[in-house]
Length: 74
Figure 1 (tube, rainbow, N blue to C red):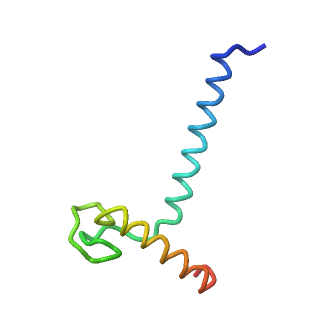
Figure 2: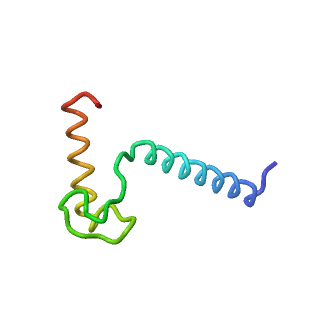
Figure 3: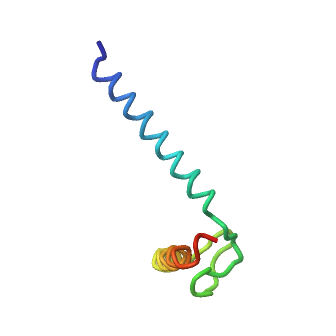
């Protein structure tokens, strides 16, 4: 019979596996690369950054989701 530590270990492993799967899924969806400008508003950003803030990232994601819905997942 499992003790509390074994059950906790299983939950941790499951959480890690879910997180890894989520990141891999997001990486497959990523189709933009850093260009030193925010991909939503065009404001200058540091090297390797895609958006200037979370608002632009969220707006970009919402816009892309709408585009995919309307254009049939190009």
